[in-house]
Image (cartoon, rainbow, N blue to C red; front, top):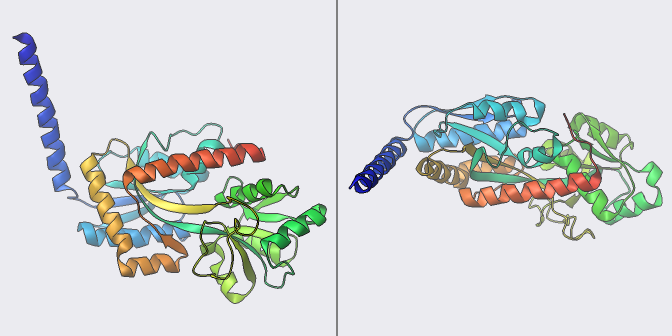
Length: 325
């Protein structure tokens, strides 16, 4: 009898918890939301977050504010996010940096897989290989031939140690078997100056960061890092097509919440993000930023993150890149 009463009590408590969670989810959202961006204002990630925030505000019927917490390779923003409640009102602009950081830092103070619940991808940014507009280098085959012919006079330029751009360049270098340095600069502007001055012969960067220089003719794209050609550069082959089999390197943005957020709220947010990205006006804005819009289920995004972490860990280990902090 005691066991029967205990079982009924436990069942009642469970039903009560489910009912409470369901009621909370059904009422969601009933106050403003925020998107924590682990980068400074004005960058592509920040602008992407603001475009999505505007769309989410319209879909959810509540204000969505973007808050920037730059610093420490995204760690500051992640820690701020993890101090919030797991209630779906704090969203996190997760990026490829979250896949790189676990292997790039000696001691990362958070676990992006265990402590964050993925909601949906927003889209990806192509990593491209570009040269000076007047460079005699026309193709990725030219890059490899020139680097092998004169390794002491050939440099590959990127931004920031541990950035997706640097790791994409390292992936190209090691996969191609080249013995030339990958030189990280502090900013895209510095890399551009080095390319224009012929101190760097090819650079790896995201499309949004250099789109103006490409349009002006200062830079010429010669290779695309993704699996498909970019519609903006239909005549430029992928790097894999250019003689580096299986080469894939892209950067991406998505939305995550704190682990423990009720599944019904995660589902509500996923539906809203997917509708926002699919909206023609928003889709156009994202595309103009150089992003290829793409959404997923929470499960698909979680699996993708794990795959990306494993991929970049191998790149970092193979290139013997010194870990930060």
